[in-house]
Image (cartoon, rainbow, N blue to C red):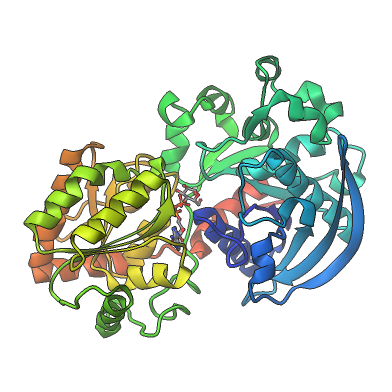
Length: 484
Ligand code: ADP
Ligand code: GLC
Protein backbone atom coordinates (compact mmCIF):
# COMPACT_ATOMS: atom_id res chain seq x y z
CA UNK A 1 0.00 0.00 0.00
CA UNK A 2 1.01 3.60 -0.50
CA UNK A 3 0.95 5.58 2.72
CA UNK A 4 1.55 9.27 3.25
CA UNK A 5 2.45 9.70 6.92
CA UNK A 6 2.28 13.23 8.32
CA UNK A 7 3.56 14.14 11.77
CA UNK A 8 4.81 17.24 13.56
CA UNK A 9 7.51 15.07 15.18
CA UNK A 10 9.66 12.36 13.63
CA UNK A 11 12.67 11.01 15.55
CA UNK A 12 15.57 11.52 15.22
CA UNK A 13 14.88 14.74 13.28
CA UNK A 14 12.44 16.37 15.69
CA UNK A 15 11.13 15.04 18.98
CA UNK A 16 9.68 16.43 22.20
CA UNK A 17 8.10 13.18 23.40
CA UNK A 18 6.61 9.86 22.34
CA UNK A 19 4.99 11.23 19.17
CA UNK A 20 8.51 11.67 17.80
CA UNK A 21 9.41 8.07 18.61
CA UNK A 22 6.26 6.77 16.92
CA UNK A 23 6.75 9.12 13.96
CA UNK A 24 10.14 7.53 13.35
CA UNK A 25 9.34 3.92 14.21
CA UNK A 26 5.90 3.23 12.74
CA UNK A 27 6.92 4.26 9.18
CA UNK A 28 10.05 2.13 9.51
CA UNK A 29 7.90 -0.85 10.54
CA UNK A 30 5.43 -0.23 7.69
CA UNK A 31 8.32 -0.16 5.24
CA UNK A 32 9.71 -3.40 6.71
CA UNK A 33 6.27 -4.93 6.15
CA UNK A 34 6.62 -4.10 2.45
CA UNK A 35 4.65 -0.85 2.12
CA UNK A 36 5.57 2.32 0.27
CA UNK A 37 5.47 4.91 3.04
CA UNK A 38 6.50 8.55 2.70
CA UNK A 39 6.88 10.76 5.75
CA UNK A 40 6.35 14.53 5.90
CA UNK A 41 7.29 16.96 8.67
CA UNK A 42 8.30 20.63 8.92
CA UNK A 43 11.90 21.69 8.48
CA UNK A 44 12.33 23.21 11.95
CA UNK A 45 15.44 25.23 12.74
CA UNK A 46 16.62 22.38 14.98
CA UNK A 47 16.54 19.91 12.07
CA UNK A 48 18.89 22.23 10.21
CA UNK A 49 21.19 22.26 13.26
CA UNK A 50 21.23 18.45 13.47
CA UNK A 51 23.80 16.46 11.60
CA UNK A 52 21.54 14.94 8.93
CA UNK A 53 22.07 14.28 5.27
CA UNK A 54 19.33 16.39 3.72
CA UNK A 55 18.96 17.26 0.02
CA UNK A 56 16.77 19.61 -1.93
CA UNK A 57 13.83 17.83 -3.59
CA UNK A 58 11.62 20.54 -5.11
CA UNK A 59 12.07 24.25 -5.63
CA UNK A 60 10.01 27.05 -4.24
CA UNK A 61 6.22 27.08 -4.46
CA UNK A 62 3.85 29.71 -3.25
CA UNK A 63 0.93 28.76 -1.06
CA UNK A 64 -1.81 31.17 -0.07
CA UNK A 65 -3.47 30.90 3.30
CA UNK A 66 -6.00 33.76 3.38
CA UNK A 67 -4.00 36.98 3.31
CA UNK A 68 -0.69 35.15 3.76
CA UNK A 69 1.47 34.26 0.80
CA UNK A 70 3.87 31.63 2.03
CA UNK A 71 6.71 30.39 0.01
CA UNK A 72 8.04 26.92 0.73
CA UNK A 73 10.35 24.40 -0.87
CA UNK A 74 10.81 20.67 -0.25
CA UNK A 75 13.84 18.97 1.18
CA UNK A 76 14.34 15.24 1.43
CA UNK A 77 16.18 12.62 3.41
CA UNK A 78 15.53 9.14 4.74
CA UNK A 79 14.83 7.89 8.26
CA UNK A 80 18.38 6.98 9.35
CA UNK A 81 19.15 3.31 8.93
CA UNK A 82 16.24 2.83 6.50
CA UNK A 83 15.22 3.72 2.96
CA UNK A 84 12.00 5.40 4.13
CA UNK A 85 11.78 8.74 2.28
CA UNK A 86 11.23 11.78 4.46
CA UNK A 87 10.13 15.12 3.01
CA UNK A 88 10.48 18.38 4.85
CA UNK A 89 8.24 21.38 4.29
CA UNK A 90 10.86 24.11 4.23
CA UNK A 91 9.15 27.39 5.07
CA UNK A 92 11.59 29.53 7.09
CA UNK A 93 8.93 32.16 7.83
CA UNK A 94 6.98 29.56 9.82
CA UNK A 95 9.52 27.02 11.03
CA UNK A 96 12.75 28.96 11.43
CA UNK A 97 12.18 29.34 15.18
CA UNK A 98 13.63 27.88 18.35
CA UNK A 99 10.87 25.48 19.31
CA UNK A 100 8.92 22.78 17.55
CA UNK A 101 5.78 24.21 19.13
CA UNK A 102 5.34 27.88 20.01
CA UNK A 103 2.88 30.21 21.69
CA UNK A 104 3.15 32.53 18.70
CA UNK A 105 0.06 34.12 17.18
CA UNK A 106 0.50 32.18 13.93
CA UNK A 107 0.67 28.66 15.41
CA UNK A 108 -2.45 27.74 13.38
CA UNK A 109 -0.67 28.77 10.18
CA UNK A 110 2.42 26.73 11.06
CA UNK A 111 0.45 23.51 11.20
CA UNK A 112 -2.18 24.30 8.55
CA UNK A 113 0.86 24.64 6.32
CA UNK A 114 2.18 21.22 7.38
CA UNK A 115 -0.97 19.51 6.05
CA UNK A 116 -1.06 21.59 2.88
CA UNK A 117 2.65 21.16 2.32
CA UNK A 118 2.35 17.38 2.61
CA UNK A 119 -0.50 17.23 0.09
CA UNK A 120 1.32 19.50 -2.34
CA UNK A 121 4.44 17.34 -2.05
CA UNK A 122 2.31 14.27 -2.88
CA UNK A 123 1.05 16.15 -5.94
CA UNK A 124 4.57 17.03 -7.03
CA UNK A 125 5.69 13.44 -6.57
CA UNK A 126 2.56 12.17 -8.36
CA UNK A 127 2.24 9.95 -5.28
CA UNK A 128 -1.37 8.71 -5.04
CA UNK A 129 -1.68 7.49 -1.45
CA UNK A 130 -4.07 4.72 -0.50
CA UNK A 131 -3.86 6.06 3.03
CA UNK A 132 -3.00 9.46 4.41
CA UNK A 133 -2.12 8.83 8.05
CA UNK A 134 -2.20 11.99 10.17
CA UNK A 135 -1.21 12.41 13.81
CA UNK A 136 -2.66 14.63 16.54
CA UNK A 137 -4.11 18.09 15.94
CA UNK A 138 -1.15 19.38 13.97
CA UNK A 139 -2.09 17.47 10.82
CA UNK A 140 -5.78 16.90 11.58
CA UNK A 141 -7.10 19.29 8.91
CA UNK A 142 -5.95 16.99 6.11
CA UNK A 143 -9.08 14.77 6.06
CA UNK A 144 -11.44 17.73 5.61
CA UNK A 145 -9.09 19.24 3.02
CA UNK A 146 -9.20 16.08 0.91
CA UNK A 147 -12.98 15.93 1.16
CA UNK A 148 -13.55 19.50 0.14
CA UNK A 149 -11.10 21.86 -1.53
CA UNK A 150 -8.95 19.04 -2.97
CA UNK A 151 -11.86 16.81 -3.96
CA UNK A 152 -11.20 17.77 -7.60
CA UNK A 153 -7.78 16.12 -7.64
CA UNK A 154 -8.03 12.59 -9.05
CA UNK A 155 -4.68 11.78 -7.50
CA UNK A 156 -6.53 11.46 -4.18
CA UNK A 157 -9.64 9.80 -5.57
CA UNK A 158 -9.01 6.50 -3.77
CA UNK A 159 -7.33 8.00 -0.73
CA UNK A 160 -8.66 7.18 2.73
CA UNK A 161 -7.60 8.95 5.92
CA UNK A 162 -6.58 7.70 9.36
CA UNK A 163 -6.19 10.07 12.31
CA UNK A 164 -4.17 8.81 15.26
CA UNK A 165 -4.86 10.46 18.60
CA UNK A 166 -1.70 10.47 20.69
CA UNK A 167 -3.08 12.86 23.27
CA UNK A 168 -6.62 14.20 23.36
CA UNK A 169 -5.50 16.78 25.93
CA UNK A 170 -4.02 18.87 23.09
CA UNK A 171 -6.69 19.89 20.59
CA UNK A 172 -5.28 22.79 18.59
CA UNK A 173 -8.16 25.10 19.47
CA UNK A 174 -8.01 28.61 18.06
CA UNK A 175 -10.41 31.53 17.63
CA UNK A 176 -12.94 31.02 14.82
CA UNK A 177 -11.38 34.05 13.09
CA UNK A 178 -8.50 31.81 11.91
CA UNK A 179 -10.77 29.94 9.49
CA UNK A 180 -10.03 32.18 6.48
CA UNK A 181 -6.32 31.63 7.10
CA UNK A 182 -6.45 27.85 6.79
CA UNK A 183 -7.11 27.68 3.05
CA UNK A 184 -10.43 26.03 3.87
CA UNK A 185 -12.90 28.89 3.55
CA UNK A 186 -14.83 26.91 0.92
CA UNK A 187 -15.24 24.10 3.45
CA UNK A 188 -16.73 26.32 6.16
CA UNK A 189 -19.88 24.17 6.30
CA UNK A 190 -17.82 21.12 7.21
CA UNK A 191 -16.48 22.61 10.44
CA UNK A 192 -18.42 22.10 13.63
CA UNK A 193 -21.01 24.85 13.40
CA UNK A 194 -21.83 25.22 17.10
CA UNK A 195 -18.17 25.51 17.91
CA UNK A 196 -17.71 28.19 15.24
CA UNK A 197 -20.76 30.00 16.61
CA UNK A 198 -19.04 30.00 20.02
CA UNK A 199 -16.06 31.65 18.36
CA UNK A 200 -13.79 28.59 18.39
CA UNK A 201 -12.26 26.21 15.91
CA UNK A 202 -10.48 23.02 16.88
CA UNK A 203 -8.14 21.22 14.49
CA UNK A 204 -8.52 17.95 16.38
CA UNK A 205 -12.33 17.99 16.45
CA UNK A 206 -12.35 18.71 12.71
CA UNK A 207 -10.13 15.68 12.17
CA UNK A 208 -12.33 13.50 14.36
CA UNK A 209 -15.38 14.51 12.33
CA UNK A 210 -13.83 13.84 8.92
CA UNK A 211 -11.20 11.09 9.13
CA UNK A 212 -12.28 7.75 7.66
CA UNK A 213 -10.92 6.03 10.75
CA UNK A 214 -9.60 7.16 14.09
CA UNK A 215 -7.06 5.27 16.11
CA UNK A 216 -5.54 5.91 19.46
CA UNK A 217 -2.43 4.47 21.00
CA UNK A 218 -3.78 1.88 23.45
CA UNK A 219 -7.00 -0.11 23.91
CA UNK A 220 -7.59 1.28 27.41
CA UNK A 221 -7.20 4.90 26.28
CA UNK A 222 -9.59 4.16 23.39
CA UNK A 223 -12.24 3.45 26.04
CA UNK A 224 -11.19 6.29 28.35
CA UNK A 225 -11.56 8.98 25.68
CA UNK A 226 -15.22 8.16 25.28
CA UNK A 227 -15.76 9.26 28.90
CA UNK A 228 -16.00 12.87 30.08
CA UNK A 229 -12.85 12.60 32.22
CA UNK A 230 -10.40 11.69 29.49
CA UNK A 231 -12.33 12.85 26.42
CA UNK A 232 -11.64 16.44 27.53
CA UNK A 233 -14.77 17.73 25.81
CA UNK A 234 -14.49 15.45 22.77
CA UNK A 235 -15.98 12.31 24.36
CA UNK A 236 -19.41 12.82 22.79
CA UNK A 237 -17.90 13.15 19.31
CA UNK A 238 -15.72 10.11 19.90
CA UNK A 239 -18.71 8.08 21.08
CA UNK A 240 -20.45 9.19 17.90
CA UNK A 241 -17.63 7.70 15.86
CA UNK A 242 -17.07 4.59 17.97
CA UNK A 243 -17.69 2.35 14.92
CA UNK A 244 -14.42 3.61 13.41
CA UNK A 245 -12.44 4.22 16.62
CA UNK A 246 -9.72 1.67 17.38
CA UNK A 247 -7.08 1.31 20.10
CA UNK A 248 -3.75 0.05 18.75
CA UNK A 249 -0.95 -0.15 21.25
CA UNK A 250 2.35 1.51 20.29
CA UNK A 251 5.42 -0.61 19.86
CA UNK A 252 9.04 0.17 20.58
CA UNK A 253 11.74 0.61 17.99
CA UNK A 254 14.09 -2.23 18.71
CA UNK A 255 16.92 -0.77 16.68
CA UNK A 256 17.07 2.25 18.98
CA UNK A 257 15.51 1.11 22.26
CA UNK A 258 17.13 -2.26 22.68
CA UNK A 259 19.71 -2.93 25.41
CA UNK A 260 21.46 -5.42 23.10
CA UNK A 261 22.39 -2.76 20.57
CA UNK A 262 21.30 0.67 21.85
CA UNK A 263 23.42 3.12 19.82
CA UNK A 264 23.56 5.55 22.78
CA UNK A 265 25.05 3.02 25.22
CA UNK A 266 28.66 1.94 25.54
CA UNK A 267 27.77 -1.28 27.34
CA UNK A 268 25.10 -3.66 26.18
CA UNK A 269 23.17 -6.38 27.95
CA UNK A 270 20.32 -8.84 27.70
CA UNK A 271 18.12 -10.92 29.99
CA UNK A 272 20.72 -13.67 30.06
CA UNK A 273 23.78 -11.40 30.38
CA UNK A 274 23.24 -8.52 32.77
CA UNK A 275 26.85 -7.46 33.43
CA UNK A 276 26.48 -4.58 30.97
CA UNK A 277 23.62 -3.17 33.04
CA UNK A 278 25.94 -2.81 36.03
CA UNK A 279 28.45 -0.96 33.86
CA UNK A 280 25.69 1.34 32.68
CA UNK A 281 24.81 1.95 36.31
CA UNK A 282 28.42 2.94 37.04
CA UNK A 283 28.41 5.22 34.02
CA UNK A 284 25.17 6.81 35.17
CA UNK A 285 26.75 7.49 38.58
CA UNK A 286 29.66 9.17 36.85
CA UNK A 287 27.43 11.15 34.52
CA UNK A 288 25.22 12.45 37.34
CA UNK A 289 27.76 12.73 40.16
CA UNK A 290 25.80 10.39 42.43
CA UNK A 291 27.93 8.07 44.57
CA UNK A 292 28.12 4.62 43.05
CA UNK A 293 26.51 2.26 45.55
CA UNK A 294 25.46 -1.00 43.92
CA UNK A 295 22.74 -2.64 45.96
CA UNK A 296 21.13 0.68 46.86
CA UNK A 297 17.98 0.96 44.74
CA UNK A 298 18.03 3.70 42.14
CA UNK A 299 14.76 5.09 40.78
CA UNK A 300 14.79 6.79 37.37
CA UNK A 301 12.40 9.36 35.90
CA UNK A 302 12.53 10.63 32.30
CA UNK A 303 9.58 12.85 31.57
CA UNK A 304 8.08 15.97 30.15
CA UNK A 305 7.38 17.83 33.39
CA UNK A 306 3.69 18.55 32.86
CA UNK A 307 0.41 18.07 34.70
CA UNK A 308 -0.33 14.94 32.63
CA UNK A 309 2.60 13.10 34.17
CA UNK A 310 1.16 13.11 37.71
CA UNK A 311 4.35 14.31 39.36
CA UNK A 312 2.37 16.37 41.88
CA UNK A 313 2.10 13.15 43.87
CA UNK A 314 5.87 13.27 44.29
CA UNK A 315 5.76 16.57 46.19
CA UNK A 316 5.01 14.95 49.53
CA UNK A 317 5.95 11.33 48.83
CA UNK A 318 9.52 11.69 47.57
CA UNK A 319 10.94 13.83 50.39
CA UNK A 320 9.46 11.34 52.86
CA UNK A 321 10.87 8.38 50.95
CA UNK A 322 14.35 9.92 50.71
CA UNK A 323 14.34 10.65 54.43
CA UNK A 324 13.29 7.15 55.42
CA UNK A 325 14.94 4.90 52.88
CA UNK A 326 18.39 4.48 51.47
CA UNK A 327 17.45 5.12 47.83
CA UNK A 328 18.73 7.18 44.93
CA UNK A 329 16.70 9.15 42.42
CA UNK A 330 17.80 10.28 38.94
CA UNK A 331 15.48 12.67 37.14
CA UNK A 332 15.72 13.95 33.56
CA UNK A 333 13.10 16.37 32.34
CA UNK A 334 11.97 19.84 31.59
CA UNK A 335 8.65 21.61 31.49
CA UNK A 336 6.53 23.55 33.97
CA UNK A 337 8.51 25.58 36.51
CA UNK A 338 6.75 24.11 39.57
CA UNK A 339 8.08 20.63 38.77
CA UNK A 340 11.49 21.89 37.71
CA UNK A 341 11.78 23.84 40.97
CA UNK A 342 10.66 20.86 43.04
CA UNK A 343 13.27 18.49 41.60
CA UNK A 344 15.99 21.16 41.72
CA UNK A 345 15.24 21.73 45.44
CA UNK A 346 15.19 18.00 46.12
CA UNK A 347 18.60 17.60 44.48
CA UNK A 348 20.03 20.54 46.43
CA UNK A 349 18.69 19.17 49.71
CA UNK A 350 19.99 15.63 49.17
CA UNK A 351 22.86 15.79 46.66
CA UNK A 352 24.11 12.31 47.54
CA UNK A 353 20.69 10.83 46.84
CA UNK A 354 19.15 12.89 44.05
CA UNK A 355 20.40 14.06 40.65
CA UNK A 356 18.27 16.30 38.44
CA UNK A 357 19.15 17.07 34.83
CA UNK A 358 16.88 19.87 33.70
CA UNK A 359 17.24 19.44 29.95
CA UNK A 360 16.38 17.31 26.95
CA UNK A 361 19.06 14.71 26.33
CA UNK A 362 18.53 11.60 24.26
CA UNK A 363 21.79 9.92 25.43
CA UNK A 364 21.00 10.54 29.10
CA UNK A 365 17.45 9.22 28.65
CA UNK A 366 18.91 5.93 27.39
CA UNK A 367 21.49 5.80 30.17
CA UNK A 368 18.83 6.34 32.85
CA UNK A 369 16.71 3.50 31.43
CA UNK A 370 19.77 1.24 31.44
CA UNK A 371 21.47 2.33 34.66
CA UNK A 372 18.49 2.55 37.04
CA UNK A 373 16.86 -0.26 39.00
CA UNK A 374 13.28 0.93 38.69
CA UNK A 375 11.41 3.60 36.75
CA UNK A 376 8.71 5.91 38.07
CA UNK A 377 5.77 7.03 35.93
CA UNK A 378 2.78 8.11 38.07
CA UNK A 379 0.85 9.64 35.14
CA UNK A 380 -2.60 11.10 35.73
CA UNK A 381 -3.47 9.93 32.25
CA UNK A 382 -1.27 8.24 29.67
CA UNK A 383 -2.52 7.52 26.15
CA UNK A 384 0.12 4.85 25.69
CA UNK A 385 3.45 5.74 27.26
CA UNK A 386 6.67 4.45 25.83
CA UNK A 387 8.99 4.87 28.77
CA UNK A 388 7.40 2.05 30.75
CA UNK A 389 8.00 -0.28 27.79
CA UNK A 390 11.60 0.92 27.45
CA UNK A 391 12.01 0.27 31.18
CA UNK A 392 10.67 -3.26 30.88
CA UNK A 393 13.05 -3.96 28.00
CA UNK A 394 16.01 -2.54 29.97
CA UNK A 395 15.43 -4.58 33.14
CA UNK A 396 14.20 -1.51 35.05
CA UNK A 397 10.73 -2.44 36.32
CA UNK A 398 8.25 0.43 36.07
CA UNK A 399 6.14 1.82 38.91
CA UNK A 400 3.00 3.26 37.33
CA UNK A 401 -0.51 4.54 37.95
CA UNK A 402 -3.20 2.33 36.41
CA UNK A 403 -4.27 4.48 33.49
CA UNK A 404 -4.38 4.28 29.68
CA UNK A 405 -1.58 2.38 28.01
CA UNK A 406 0.08 1.75 31.38
CA UNK A 407 -2.80 -0.64 32.17
CA UNK A 408 -2.22 -2.44 28.89
CA UNK A 409 1.51 -2.94 29.38
CA UNK A 410 2.31 -3.18 33.11
CA UNK A 411 0.99 -5.98 35.33
CA UNK A 412 1.46 -5.95 39.08
CA UNK A 413 4.24 -8.28 40.22
CA UNK A 414 3.12 -11.04 42.55
CA UNK A 415 6.02 -12.13 44.70
CA UNK A 416 4.34 -15.41 45.55
CA UNK A 417 3.74 -16.64 42.03
CA UNK A 418 6.55 -14.70 40.32
CA UNK A 419 4.08 -13.34 37.77
CA UNK A 420 3.85 -9.74 36.64
CA UNK A 421 6.34 -7.21 35.31
CA UNK A 422 6.07 -4.07 37.44
CA UNK A 423 4.19 -2.12 40.10
CA UNK A 424 0.79 -0.62 39.51
CA UNK A 425 -1.27 1.56 41.86
CA UNK A 426 -4.97 2.00 41.25
CA UNK A 427 -5.81 5.20 43.10
CA UNK A 428 -4.17 8.38 41.98
CA UNK A 429 -3.19 9.69 45.40
CA UNK A 430 -0.21 9.83 47.76
CA UNK A 431 -1.19 6.58 49.47
CA UNK A 432 -1.29 4.77 46.15
CA UNK A 433 2.14 5.99 45.15
CA UNK A 434 3.61 5.33 48.59
CA UNK A 435 2.23 1.79 48.60
CA UNK A 436 3.71 1.05 45.16
CA UNK A 437 7.14 2.46 46.03
CA UNK A 438 7.21 0.64 49.34
CA UNK A 439 6.23 -2.65 47.73
CA UNK A 440 8.78 -2.18 44.93
CA UNK A 441 11.56 -1.46 47.42
CA UNK A 442 10.71 -4.51 49.50
CA UNK A 443 10.72 -6.72 46.40
CA UNK A 444 14.11 -5.26 45.49
CA UNK A 445 15.54 -6.68 48.71
CA UNK A 446 14.44 -10.16 47.70
CA UNK A 447 17.10 -10.86 45.06
CA UNK A 448 15.47 -14.00 43.69
CA UNK A 449 12.10 -12.32 43.28
CA UNK A 450 13.70 -9.27 41.70
CA UNK A 451 15.63 -11.35 39.15
CA UNK A 452 12.42 -13.02 38.17
CA UNK A 453 10.65 -9.68 37.81
CA UNK A 454 13.46 -8.25 35.68
CA UNK A 455 13.49 -11.36 33.54
CA UNK A 456 9.71 -11.21 33.00
CA UNK A 457 9.91 -7.68 31.58
CA UNK A 458 13.03 -8.21 29.51
CA UNK A 459 11.67 -11.25 27.73
CA UNK A 460 8.41 -9.65 26.60
CA UNK A 461 8.13 -8.53 23.01
CA UNK A 462 6.99 -4.94 22.55
CA UNK A 463 8.40 -4.50 19.07
CA UNK A 464 6.53 -2.77 16.27
CA UNK A 465 6.69 -5.80 14.01
CA UNK A 466 3.57 -7.22 15.69
CA UNK A 467 1.66 -4.00 16.19
CA UNK A 468 2.13 -2.87 12.63
CA UNK A 469 -0.16 -5.65 11.44
CA UNK A 470 -3.05 -4.02 13.24
CA UNK A 471 -2.51 -0.79 11.31
CA UNK A 472 -2.16 -2.65 8.03
CA UNK A 473 -5.37 -4.60 8.68
CA UNK A 474 -7.17 -1.34 9.35
CA UNK A 475 -5.77 0.31 6.20
CA UNK A 476 -6.93 -2.69 4.19
CA UNK A 477 -10.45 -2.43 5.56
CA UNK A 478 -10.61 1.19 4.46
CA UNK A 479 -9.10 0.99 1.01
CA UNK A 480 -11.61 0.05 -1.67
CA UNK A 481 -10.66 -3.22 -3.33
CA UNK A 482 -7.71 -4.01 -1.03
CA UNK A 483 -7.95 -7.58 0.18
CA UNK A 484 -6.64 -8.69 3.53
P1 ADP B 1 4.99 11.53 26.17
O1 ADP B 1 4.93 11.33 24.70
O2 ADP B 1 3.67 11.84 26.77
O3 ADP B 1 6.02 12.51 26.57
P2 ADP B 1 6.04 8.78 26.23
O4 ADP B 1 6.38 7.90 27.35
O5 ADP B 1 5.18 8.21 25.17
O6 ADP B 1 5.40 10.11 26.83
O7 ADP B 1 7.35 9.22 25.47
C1 ADP B 1 8.30 10.08 26.00
C2 ADP B 1 9.52 10.07 25.11
O8 ADP B 1 10.22 11.30 25.27
C3 ADP B 1 10.51 8.97 25.46
O9 ADP B 1 11.26 8.60 24.33
C4 ADP B 1 11.40 9.70 26.49
O10 ADP B 1 12.65 9.09 26.61
C5 ADP B 1 11.47 11.06 25.85
N1 ADP B 1 11.79 12.15 26.78
C6 ADP B 1 10.95 12.82 27.62
N2 ADP B 1 11.62 13.79 28.28
C7 ADP B 1 12.89 13.73 27.85
C8 ADP B 1 14.09 14.47 28.16
N3 ADP B 1 14.07 15.48 29.03
N4 ADP B 1 15.22 14.13 27.52
C9 ADP B 1 15.24 13.11 26.62
N5 ADP B 1 14.17 12.38 26.30
C10 ADP B 1 13.01 12.68 26.89
C1 GLC C 1 1.63 11.14 23.54
C2 GLC C 1 1.19 10.48 24.82
C3 GLC C 1 1.96 9.21 25.15
C4 GLC C 1 2.17 8.35 23.92
C5 GLC C 1 2.80 9.17 22.82
C6 GLC C 1 3.05 8.37 21.56
O1 GLC C 1 2.66 12.02 23.72
O2 GLC C 1 1.25 11.37 25.91
O3 GLC C 1 1.27 8.48 26.14
O4 GLC C 1 2.98 7.24 24.23
O5 GLC C 1 1.97 10.24 22.50
O6 GLC C 1 1.86 7.82 21.04
